[in-house]
Image (cartoon, rainbow, N blue to C red; front, side, top):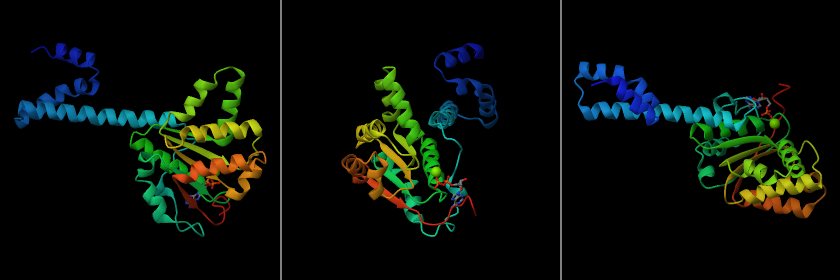
Length: 241
Ligand code: ADP
Ligand code: MG
């Protein structure tokens, strides 16, 4: 049997890993007297594992995380108040499968972005298409797209991932157009995909934040909270620890 021909055929079928480990697997098979079915299973399962690894890598790159943060590095004893069980439950990603939302609320430096990144990382490990953005970046991106007629394409960037993380809602005021654009994203994703929002502002301040439009703020909160979990963190900033 000409192995080169087999490898060519495997490459044509995009079974790269399968082709790469063929030689060593055949040697192992001879040594351990594996049956043909065993050999095929070994090759196929390693191909699957390699694909899964490649997918996770791609998901993490696509997500655009500013840094990688994980839950292991989060010290639950630092915040004055935090519901550890609630957060650990979120990490099983049922909320993503159910297209639910998570609102991480608390003062600056209490680990909201850290937790949002940890949820995003966990989602990528499970192969979930994820996108991380800040509220301002999302608004700027969509505003610019209105100017060059690429709005429909651009809004898809924010509506197509199964998980969208919108960080830092509340640090900068949002003008009328910005508030409407943000609302469009949240409303398009409603019951279609999950959102994780981090904010330093209580819901009662969202009207002020969103160009003094209390009606729009209520509608936005309604959509986020209807199928959503509110995670409240209280305490001092970890940055000045
Ligand atoms: P926030 O988004 O609430 O302003 P961050 O998540 O950006 O806060 O946290 C600021 C820094 O402190 C980050 O480097 C983060 O990893 C770290 N940090 C915050 N809270 C904790 C914590 N409880 N345990 C470990 N690191 C934390
Ligand atoms: Mg933050």
